[in-house]
Length: 174
Ligand SMILES: [Zn+2]
Image (tube, rainbow, N blue to C red; front, side):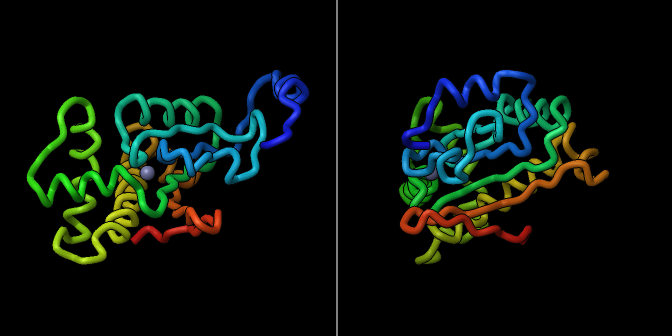
């Protein structure tokens, strides 16, 4: 993306959009989704929330991209050392739930941390993987997406991004 000719790329993509994937990832500044996948304008739809947490706006956006634009691939991309997961582990260990809307993120990630085992010394990397898989499952069961998944019109997959190498590994459904 660096050194990109923005004007030319924008002009080339300014007709109807036909993206081939939607990627839901974390807000972490070290995980820039278009750059990671080397994608330019018009190629992928990107949604980023802390810890790739779902809410109605996120699900509605994915429903739109899959249902209206016919995009056949949804990827949930987690990453190592995710601050949202770390904050959730901390909140569960100390019993101190954050205030504000941050509480929503913690509440949504908490089941993944609990599944991983709060007392496990490796809870953070385990919870990060659990949380990707759980988010994938939730999207596959989404009211409007489930039919497309069952019909094979869309695949929902999970991946894990390695901050140090820039590599993405696919996670099985687990
Ligand atoms: Zn993160």
